[in-house]
Image (tube, rainbow, N blue to C red; front, side, top):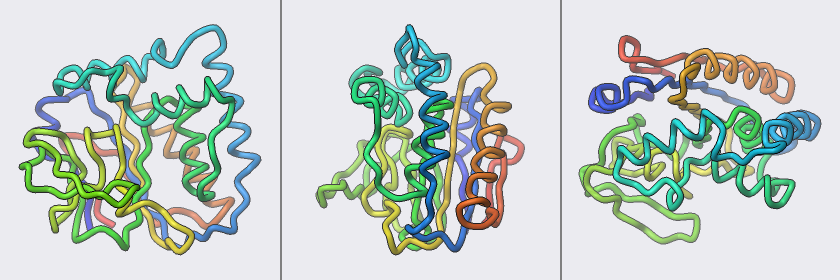
Length: 230
């Protein structure tokens, strides 16, 4: 199996930095509460006296969404949506230890992190422009067809595992209690994106090794190294 971005995406968004991680052997029994609280505290300190929209990581994604023809305050990247909810409510719902950990790291870094159940992926995943024929399963069980030209996470069977790039993941590949192998993707576009994605992957790998076992593989992707095999 492999993960990649299309050449069109690298052409149109050369500032993109992406990190990928593959992990096997997860379960829902791990205790990540201390790490979640620690990263939550980091997020609170970053939001002290400001809003998520002022963070450089979020500003960069807002610019990218504008270039995709999307209104940034209508369609927010996943990390902005999490930070907005966290700022208003002071916490996030607990879903699954791995998802909770990734959400907490996303809060702390303001970088969107996608977590996909590999068993629900057909063949490969590519971030690319939609053809209009892809199918996206909502968490409510409805099927949507992304518009032609929308950026999606697509697999070999035409399933869209995320819509509007980092805006919304699909219910099809959401991590559940029975999930065992996952693909995790972090993407950023701000000035220090590559260094920050590398630091995020290092921190995430260490937390995963403590809660479960070391990741099977990690990679930093770019135009010259666009594919992650796992």
